[in-house]
Length: 146
Ligand code: DHK
Image (cartoon, rainbow, N blue to C red; front, top):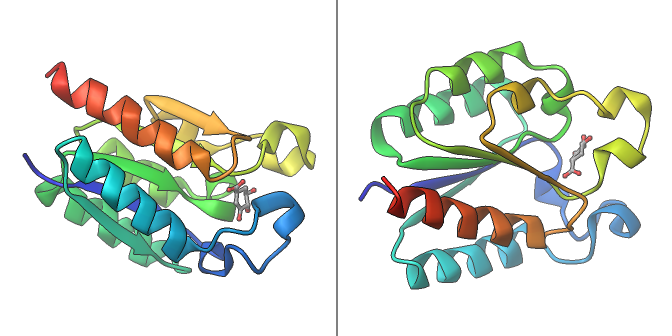
């Protein structure tokens, strides 16, 4: 079985430091370590990447197209702007779960629309960093049904 890709977009490297009242106090390293352990216990390998750059995220999605079974992605602010990330995801065949730590629908209007949601098989928003755990459980289920 190919690995699951966990992709985080811009500013998520600052998790735990930036606006903790919105994004919580756990760091990205905490989240990635927890998800890696959970993925292992579910019988999957996890590949974690974070980038602040749109093109780098497109490259990672294209890498997943060849080497990955599924994608969990929090595109950060690119959710609301990036047709390039949507196009890259549309060229990926496996399941995709979109995660937002905060409830984007409860926030500013410009955050309510996500380009990625039109491709995602599931969208999790407002569940904090637990959303990544939920996404992994969902993918393990989807991949086992294949
Ligand atoms: C993270 C960001 O950085 C924002 O730009 C999005 C998302 C919301 C989140 O909730 O994880 O609007």
